[in-house]
Length: 194
Image (cartoon, rainbow, N blue to C red; front, side):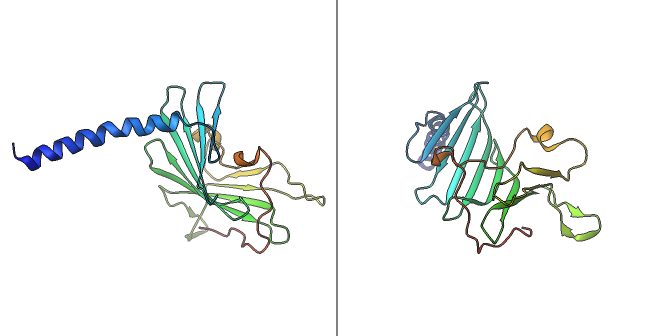
């Protein structure tokens, strides 16, 4: 065998051997300043990891058997509020994009729009306009309290949870002791589309 072929084989063996060790490292993650681990009653585990500058929050969900099932990557603003996110399956194929809209007057979260990354869904009334698969709206009362989410599922047939088994909304930041995120920048633009 040629020396170049031997080097390629050795490199391939080392690279393939490293992948399971890297995945096992996520499951063995320990709570720290930038990592939160949640054990669920069914044996599954969720690991939240944030970037040192608090601009990216990554949520990885593992089954009870330790298999990676879902990855959600949130982009955050300076106050720790999500601006957008992308959702991937366990094989890291992009499934959805989500945009978050905030009220200009006080920065309260009022809308989440979820877009299908695999299939362009168009508005039947206007074929040039892309349509989200799900819209979540929140009403804000005069005291400034947000209502329960009002979910508009635009997928025909079953509900989103029946199909995908997950909810994308961030109710509380796991790095702020479970307290709701601070109000967003009041001058931010509301979500109008992708």
